[in-house]
Structure formats: C-alpha cells, structure tokens
Length: 232
Image 1 (cartoon, rainbow, N blue to C red):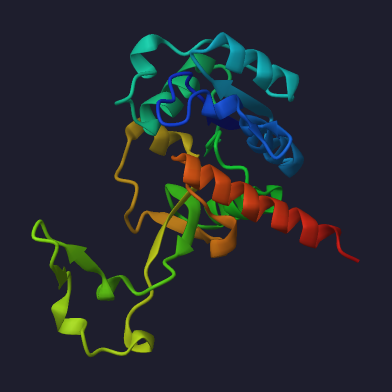
Image 2: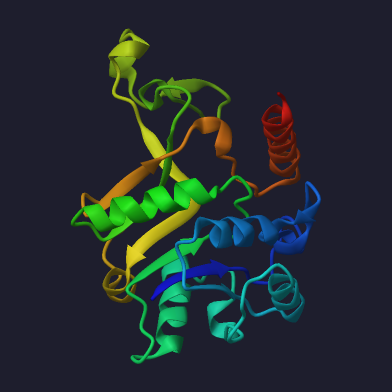
C-alpha cells in the first residue's frame, strides 16, 4: 500500500485556521488533497488532524480521516516525522504501507506530476527519502548579516570578490512533499543527508506561507499561473 499523509493541526497561530482558510477559491488543504488524488500514486489519502472542522473539510474534498490525532502530537513543538510515524502505526502490521508521502496542507503549488516524479525517484534509487527542493535566487555565499549596531558584515567575507557565476549553487527544502520508505519514517534517520534525493522544482512554484504577506504573494503567484495556463 502507498499512503499519503497530510498533517493539518488546528492550532495555527500566525494565520488562524490557515489549513482551511479560502485560498484562490478553495480551502487551502483542498489543493493538497486534490493533487494527491490526481497523482494516482496512492491507495489511501488521509489527513492527520486534531480538529473536527478540518476533518470535515478534508472529507468533503475526498480525503479520509480514519483517526483523530492525539493532543500530544498536535502542539507547537511536534515535528513532522512523529506525526507520520503515528499514522503508519495506526494502520498496524496487516495494512502496513510500503511507501509514505507526507504532503503539507499549506502547499497549494504542489502538483500531481511532481508527486509522481518523487515516487519515481524513490523507487529507482537506493535512498530513504525523495523530497521537493528549489534553488536560492541569490548566492548564499554573498549573504550579509545586520549587527546589533545596525552595521553589516558578510557571512563569508572571503567571497566578496568572487563572481556569482563561480559560486556553487545552493538549494533548500521547498516544503511541499516528502516521499519516504516506511522503514525510514519509523526509524527516523537524519533527513538532509546523502541518503535522501532531491525532486527539483522551479522557484516560481515554491512559496512558504507563514505570514499575511506570504499569503498575499502566494495568491498573486497562483492566480498568475492559472491565468497563464488558460491562455491559448
């Protein structure tokens, strides 16, 4: 069995009710559910939540909510891996999944094709995880910090005169999905290591949504992409 788990707790602080707030005409979580269903990768698409309203919305958009997440796994300090491990263990030995994909509830840019690519990467390689990444728009080696004195300094002053094109490209977690083998989710090996593989995404389809400004920018990007897709 291949399982999609969409974590969606009810206690979002910075954007209240973020997981089910309307985003471009749908509850935010609906975009993740729809991509998972459209991908054809999964035998089950479930939402792990501690919130009855989120559970109702998830069911309306086609996901199942076979259990309510315990409060101990729904506070501000609970990481993703324990939540996925709990979902796997809920199914027990008789229905233990072989591969599990965590898809974030606040990832409206996630696409079915990307989920399929992630599965192909996981299955074709000897790796624990395959997850979405994108590149930084500017060389991280040229980063500066602002000091308490309001002066600045470089993180890597040795690269002040290095041309941008001569610096190594850097990538970061895109925060959309994480394919993993069940054994990896259960054993919790380190995530960002050579035992994981990247699924590259273009920068214009990656946006963290943690603040009101993030939300506004994400909707602008999303609507622009929809408009472009509708052009003849």
